[in-house]
Length: 363
Image (cartoon, rainbow, N blue to C red; front, side):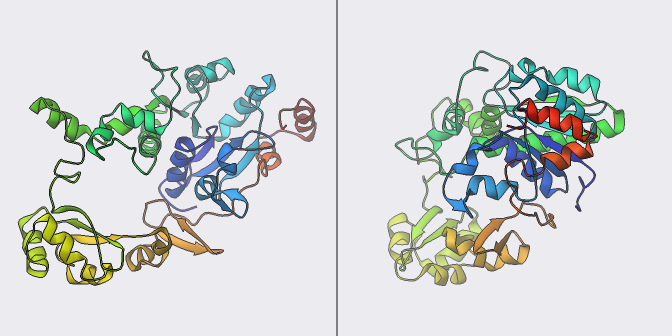
């Protein structure tokens, strides 16, 4: 693969969304990623609709071109397999509850001490320490304690994307890249403690500082960037599609006023209903406006297509990692498709592989 991480190999023990998204970003920078999955069913997201060729889209979108090993990490012999594999990797990503790695005999601090330059990224809901470290959670729970939900809809309904999961994935990928740079200089690896809740909290750092200074709570859907002013928001157009407006600066307001007239909310709502969305996008190119695209429109958008941000393959639209010239990923791996190949590369002979299979480590 091409990219700044082209020589980096990543072993991904995580499941669901945050860890696999983190290694998807790393893959977009050129790293080679091998995933460890539960034998048989594989990662849970393989079975979450909608499906692509019978595989859940959450899994498919983030796993093309990665290799899959089927290992039952509950088996005592599995820890030995991981340790045999680690000399061939630069990064280990895990997303278990705090303490699980230690219970499996894979204490990350010991691994960093034993394998020179290894970077271990630990991704968990609330981090490895603190009173909530063992508390179960999902994205909406993590986002809830950041205050972000108080900024949006008046009813407090959650955001439409997995903010904490993806914020944590990006934070982990950034931390890994920095740790790899440091390991190259010093020869020392490190353990990264990535909290999904704290990653999401970083997205509202400015709001936390601002509202705490003013000593007030935000008005739901009533602040400058959350629906409180008519110059920043979305408007329905004549064809039922929606237009985004972000005319905060005077020059954008002037461009908007020249085409739409008054800048009041009722007036803007009325005028935008007189023409189609795409007509307004063309007319207001200098007024900081854009489309609210439907999912089916994304692949055909001229800018996204020109940038290579998306590709059409097999009747499906695929999003590429957000880096220029990110390598084109390969096929969606089957559960354990590459187990024999990866273990052979790591020096496991046929007798050893047969013994592990007999012990149920491969399922």
